[in-house]
Structures are given as C-alpha cells and as structure tokens.
Amino acid sequence: MAAVATDWELTRSDVLTRLNAARTPDAHRGWTVSYDAARLNGFPFRLDLDLTHARLAEPSGWAVSAPRLNAEAYLFAPAHWVAVAPDGVVVDRRDAGPLIVKGQALRASLSDAGAHPPRLSVEGLNLTFATPPGARTFGLTSAKAFHLHTRAGLQDQGAIYLGVEGGQAGASETLDLIAAGGPVVFTLDGIFSHAGAMTGADWPSSLRAWTRSGGVLALRRLELKAGKASISAKAGELGIGPDGLLTGDLNVGAAQTPRILVAMAARGALTPDVARAGGAIALARTGNLSLPLDFEAGRVTLGPVALGPSPRLF
Image 1: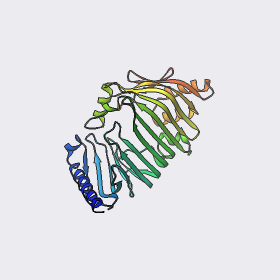
Image 2: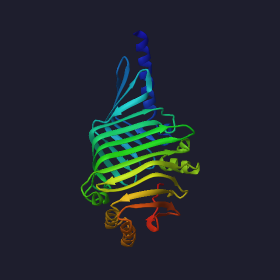
Image 3: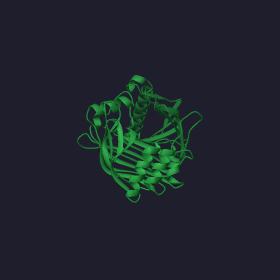
Image 4: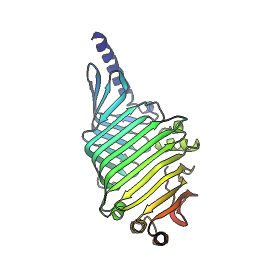
C-alpha cells in the first residue's frame, strides 16, 4: 500500500503541476486554460479532479466554459480522462455570442491527446440550447441526443462522426418552417486526410494549414431530416480553397424539395427566383431530387440552379 500511496501522490502532483502550467497561454500555442479552483482526490486508485468555473479558449474567439467540471482517470491510465458538466456548458461562438447548453447528461472522454486527431467523445442527453439577448440565435432549442466522436487512423487519416437526434427547431429558424413541428435529425460521418497537418494557434490557422497540405473530407454519410423533408449524400469529397471557401462536390438526394426551397426563400437564404427554378425541377421529378451539389469558384450550384455563394470556413 505504501508503494501505491507514493505512486498516487506523485501522479497527483504531476497532474496539478501540468494543470497549473496550462494556464499560461504559451503552453498551448495561444490557447488559454483558466479555472477558479481545482481539487484532486480519489486515493488510492483514481484521480478525481473537480474544477470550478473552468474555461478553454482559443485566440480566434471560440471557447467553452463550465461552472463545474468533474473529471476522473484511473491511476494506471492517467492519460485517459472522463468528464461531466453537471451544470451544463457555455460555448462562446466566434462572431455569434454565447450558446448556453444544459441537459440531463453532458459528458466527454479524452485519450491519446497526442494523436491526430485525439480520441475524443462528447455526448449529451435531453439537451436544451439558449442564447442571451444580443447573441445570434441557434437553429435548435433542444435535442434528445448529441454525439461527437473523433478517432485517428492509418496513413494520417482521421475519422469524425457528428450526430443529433430528436432536435426541435427554434420558432424563427428556417428549420422550423421545413420541419413543420417534426423532429430534426442530423448525421455527418466522414474520413479526412492529412490529419496531422490540422495544427495551429487557433481554429482558422489549423484549417489553413490543413488546406495547404491538400486535406479533404471524404463523406461516408451526410443527412439532414426535418419533419418529412430530408437532404442526404452518401458519397463525395469536400475541401477548403485558399480563400477559405468550401470546395468539392456531392451527389445529393432530397425529399419534400418544394417545402425546403420555400422555407429558405422565406428566410432570405435563397432568392425567390432561385427557389422557383429549383421548385420547377423538383416538380418535374415528382418532388424528389437526385442531383450534383457543387461548391466551385465561390458558388454553390444544385444541378443547373445556382443557389448562392459557397460557405466561408475561415
């Protein structure tokens, strides 16, 4: 038992030293870690770390904070941590303001921190989303489940899975018009190349480095369901141009296309002329579309219809 006590004390001291050092901005190339208080217990076989008012921020304006963060690792695996945020988290969105996330359960696990990408899992159950006055609204007000997973693979590849189940769109959002009160489901499953190149002082610089390396995201599944309407793609590759605009092409299928186009036009996401042109194509195909969706030269086109500018990612 004396040997166990020595190992536990040494590991505890090392964790607290590293945690305190992480509060220096240069420790993470510009990322900052802050907290009001840290308490580490769990002798003899666990490391139970409790943080109050913990915050992780990157220089471009993205950050996540939690009033309370309870994390745990086993003494024999001090690099694998599991954490819960019992009072929810606040996500500071660059140029959009805070997003307050609460729920029945909000937990994360992290291991292989040096891998590209790290082995990360974030899960939430019965979540609610709210924004304070002055912040940009979020597309959803609630979700029954949220899943985010990243894994490192062979040949400098990384895998990402993002899923939302049982979402409820906000009353003033485009998704609400499309869903007509029905649930929102979103799934993204893909493999990206040159994972090791996605490094930088902040999120935009990481994407720029990945872009310069020739990184692309190969989709295995992309699907958005809103009520009876849906848009899906089972294959395709996406990248980012040197100007930060999304590039690539997908073969998409859509159901209830006229409803989608009318809702997007009503919210200003499409011009009435574009919505009418897309609706005409959909009606000619009995309301269901299977067409190429191209992101090229700064524009998005669905078959012969130009939808608008390509999304900018940095």
